[in-house]
Length: 151
Image 1 (tube, rainbow, N blue to C red):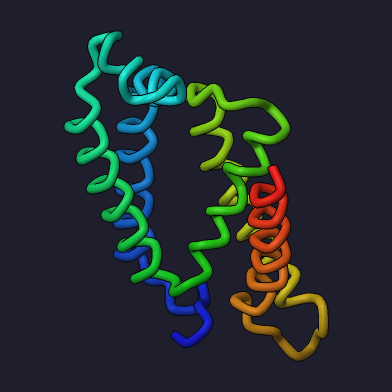
Image 2 (image 1 turned 90 degrees about the horizontal axis):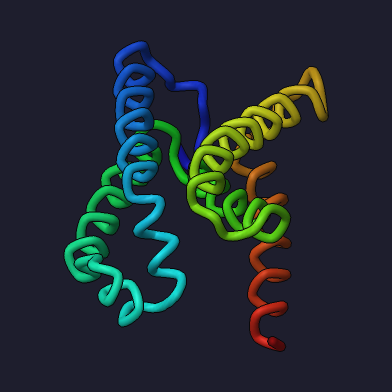
């Protein structure tokens, strides 16, 4: 698998990823308001009646399951979707009721565009899609890190 690819997709992996994605979207949408409360801080969220430790544990487990399935299906290219929520948050704000579904849709669209770009850019040769996602993700990572360091 190396840098990651969408070439090894099977119907089983497609249905597994689609089912997991749907479950995770519903899970995160259910907890969107609690996530918004966590933006205020753990103490404030606890004062609003949110069991922060339990919520954090559930979120970590759900995220680990989602990332595990995505990486097992496509390799490291799934991590390009970590860029998308930050871009959406910077443009539309931190409201998780909008951020979560838009991140899912935009993350899929970004990976699709990266795959199409990898297939078309140097046609008839084909670049590994992992290289394209790295070209997108690495500069963003440096920008995001250094913009937060100076703040």
